[in-house]
Length: 214
Image (cartoon, rainbow, N blue to C red; front, side, top):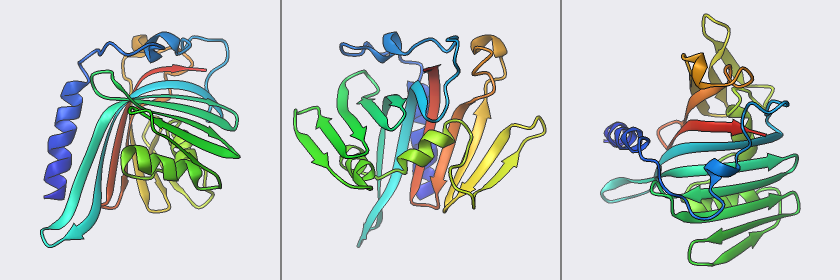
């Protein structure tokens, strides 16, 4: 049942990727700096716009595991140790905005409610509030670039030398790359266009990058 839900939901997500929603003010598509900028993005300095789907398993009841899902669009800006994440519905409505600093994490939701957290796990806690599921944010920033931020991670490459799989602390991250180089700049052509991150049968995260910037 769990695998069936992922396949069906992923199909809906991919079909939804054809929609070009009119976003609210501060449209991410307008504000992402072109990936033809002089300095290429890296895990500490980037501006990325991506579609995502998140399917996760919550506590079990007498019916068995409960499956929840979330899909939308993510605009993520990272500058050193500060992050700004804006989460949109598939049709462009702003659902949540997170501002993250080493000393403070702040979440503003669509209804205006503001939640703040302090501490090392603050970002993951607020992601759980926003999405229903915590995600390893720093690891995810590296995974977007097909990199691991853990020395014990296992990395596999395809026949062209590109990273095809990362295994890190129970996570498995697979990658697809753009085959038509005309659709990407020289600086981002070697970056993944899609990632598929799974934590056993409990979490399935899929992301499709629409634009890179810095």
